Length: 343
Ligand SMILES: [Zn+2]
Ligand SMILES: [Zn+2]
Image (cartoon, rainbow, N blue to C red; front, side, top):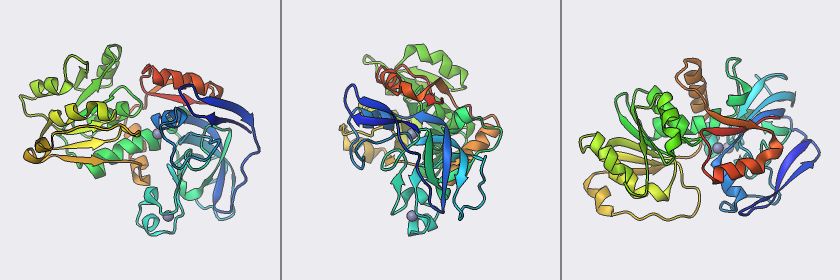
């Protein structure tokens, strides 16, 4: 099968478009033909050498995967050849305490798909049945690969982690990126007032068209927190979902209302941030990280699409052999939504 192997991470990573044997499956696994695979910032950071822990040599990346089942093991139930599935982020064991308590994304024996094990930047993939979710007909293959990450990831952050309510105010940094653009729509679908923050002037009108209430241009001259404070009569917002990271940390803190929550989704590297701790103390702020998504978050994403409350945004579709082109575009911050690979 065709696959893209990362031979050497770096500023210009060395990739190899190779022909390798198809994976074989165990009795509880599915063999899928990859129909589409999203290009995540996680992949970008492995490719440029920032993320190294748990990565095998010559990895095949890609954890946002939609595929069609072409073979199944004898223990597989409820999924059939010809079905389309989206993968969860982890190959989970299904038997440990975490798996048994609906936390399969925290599986004690879990291996990250497209991180510790082979991912979706290949023609075929073997995946455990408990790491696969059936895709209904109304979700096209081009967007279905985005259901777990970024969509499920955003839903977990906005539901289990923040517990926002209709009427809550939510600011989203990196709002035009592949993660932020979906987080912003999900927040809107949940009845929140949304403040999208972007560093690209050219993306403002497209964000407004997606239904965000306010779009703020962040620049080196003016901290976006000052604009948010001005727009909220110096109250601030209830929640900031940060999809960027350390660069915006103090602006995120300064944007919050008393009792506000900052949820970190963006910093995957080693960068450090500085904060005045008294700001957190005297305003009763909460700072929390959120990673991954459970099955229920993916199902919620399918439901939002069905009700036209969420429109997955694909920047463009590329053939898999153009992975290095996608890397360059992400590096230059050229993307609006996700790049999806589909041959
Ligand atoms: Zn992802
Ligand atoms: Zn487990």
